[in-house]
Length: 98
Image (cartoon, rainbow, N blue to C red):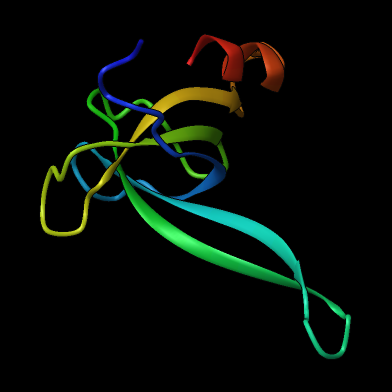
């Protein structure tokens, strides 16, 4: 059994790469309003660790929860889903590896 437990994973888009070894990833989700039953989009931005400064704005990535790395950084980039430069494997294959 994995001693670290099950860590949270999110899929999002890189919206900023201006910091050193850090990217800002925006994760979007949809919810249904409890009273009005309207579908609403919610978004949240996470600062994620990118050791090699590899990911650029517009890349879709998978991020995983990790120990605190700084005041705001609690996530790290695990794998790319799509990039502006290259063709990468499908989402299910990446999620199975992680």
